[in-house]
Image: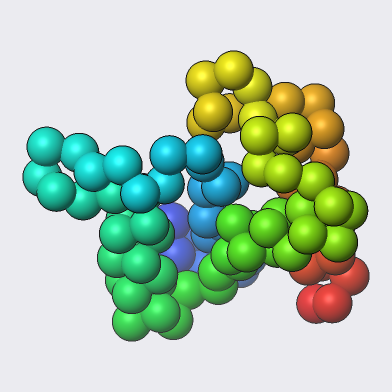
Amino acid sequence: MSKLQKELPNAKILIISPNPVANSKTENSLGLNYLDYIKASEKVINTNKWTYMNSKEGIEKKLKKKNLRLADILTNDNIHPNDQGHYIWFETLQEYFKLK
């Protein structure tokens, strides 16, 4: 990130969290799960005062509002968004930029 900031001082860089996944509490061989990585990433981002958008939370709010389940917007691998999931992700990003 520092290289980008140095070489492109006028660039606006937005770091976006990954989309929600179905198995977010499943631990890897280190005993860490998806949510642990998001929290650790957010800590580094906040410490460095980088611009961040938690799209995971935005998508979850949209799901609740639209009365959808996470499974409704993920492909069969329970990780990647399907067409509807990509559209909801787009809506979340669009709302973020409208507020800025």
